[in-house]
Length: 140
Image (cartoon, rainbow, N blue to C red; front, side, top):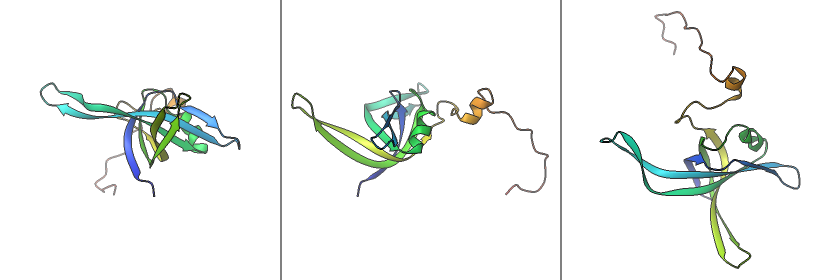
């Protein structure tokens, strides 16, 4: 059984949407993650240690939807199985890469609002809803 991981990643290359021989869609996203800590003195986030790069792959209709939803610089939250892929270059060098076979991917909102189809249809922003009348009854 493969280990399940969940993490936040920055998208560092444009997502690649491809189709296999049977016409099924799949997407590859190059994600970067690094450990950060808040420095109370400078009031800024600082990177700690090295950046980890992973390929994130997902198939099916979700891959097509995701390709239209994210771009370079977006933050995503990924959950899936961690896998290792090994291969040899033409020069005979052994290479290893790590991938997450994603079960679910969400768009992070840490750096700003997610760009959803509804927001784009509304001219780029969410429309404010009128305030409901006040009531002494709790809404829950």
